[in-house]
Length: 104
Image 1: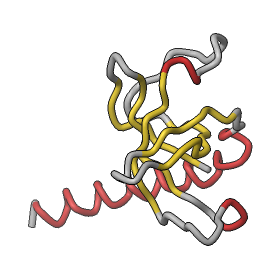
Image 2: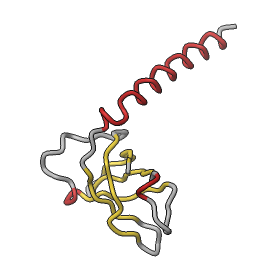
Image 3: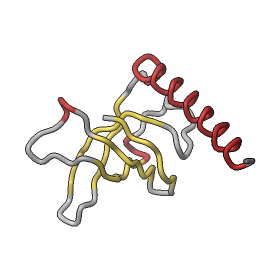
């Protein structure tokens, strides 16, 4: 599943995640936030920043709704590259349209 880094702490990365299709079961979570501990990240992972997309899976869910995550290697460029490019272009077009509407 896909996750987006929301915060970086001394414990690890707090990641907002989204579950899609095949990865769901009867305990479906449409979205949530979990902790990806530093010990779960491989050494070869490049520097991560808030807002980066990463692959994650749920390791454990607790009764208090906390979630532990593990890192999953994903090639986001080939999988979501086109989508992200189109989305970025549309956002820029909307920004331009909004600026021109405000100047009227």
